[in-house]
Length: 244
Image 1 (cartoon, one colour):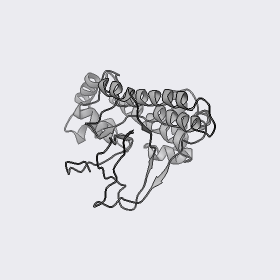
Image 2 (cartoon, one colour):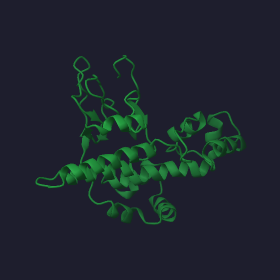
Image 3 (cartoon, helix red, strand yellow):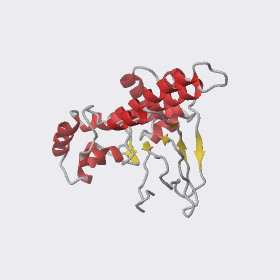
C-alpha cells in the first residue's frame, strides 16, 4: 500500500522501491509467504542513477521478467560484506551498480527496446505459467491464433510460443539459482508437469541441464521467507537510504 492509500497486487518476480522517509506497508497474502532480498544504499551516485532511470522512486512496484542477474549481484554484495574485507566499499559499490543495471534490463521487454507495456504481452506474461495452448491464450483475449501471432510479432518480434517459453525459462533459471526446489518442483512452478520434458527443453534452449545450471550459480542468495504481515496501523518507515 502506497502513501496515497492505493493497494497494489504484487506478482513475483517484482521490484519494490522503498524511498527514504516514505511510509510503506506490504505483506504476503494470508497463509502464504514470499522470498525476498533487500539492498540498502546511499551516496552521491543515487541522483545520477535516478536521472538515468535506473532508480524509479515514483514507481514503487515494478514487474520484472527475470531476477537471475539481480540475485547474482545481491549474492556478490553479501560475499563482499564479509568481516574484515579491505575492499568492502569498492566491491559493494560495484555490485550495487551491477544490481541496478540488472534490474534495469529485467524491466525491459523481450525485444530489449523498452518496457513491455503492450496489453497483450502483459496478459501473456501474467498467464505464462498456466497449462494453455497458443489457441487457448488467443481465445482468452477474444482473438484468433493468427491475430495473436501477429500481435506478439509486432510487440515482441517473436512467436507467442517463443515469447511464453522465454518467460517460463527465465523464471526457471531464477528458481534454480535462488532456491533449493527440486528440478521437478521447478518444472511444475513454470508450467511443466513432466520434469523429464522440462529438463530436455531447458538443456536444448539454455545450453546446459538444470542441475548443472544450478551448480554454476553457487550457493543460494541470502534471503528467506516472510510470513508476518506488518501492522497496517504502524507501517515501517525506511530511514535515510534508498532500498531495492
